[in-house]
Length: 129
Image (cartoon, rainbow, N blue to C red; front, side, top):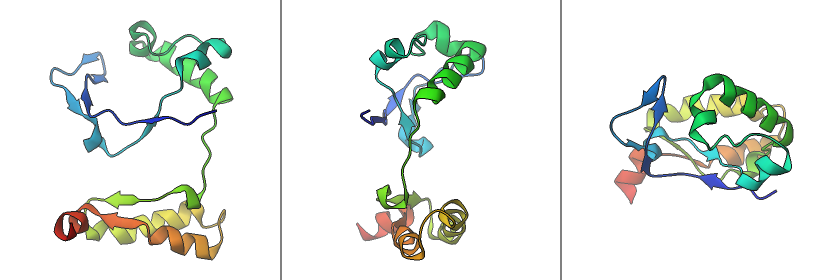
């Protein structure tokens, strides 16, 4: 399976019972989403969640997501992470504590320390670069 992470810049955003009137800047959400290839839906006999009919209906969307979760497991470890960007320097200690909770029992101490070095704040980036 090829991992494709999609980070669209702007687009329509569906929330609740309809699309928001203005385009949304997705990069401001600071999250990544996995977009499975369309042929995967056919291969595992799951309805295409890309269609508006299936995406907008929360019951249909949830059913599709449950079926997909049985076939797609995105696994990675601490060494796969290259950057963790937080908003400002004050968020770094809190993020370090979260990383210790998440990876503390599943990775060795040196890998956890290395992961901590991958933390940088947007504040630092804007000041230094």
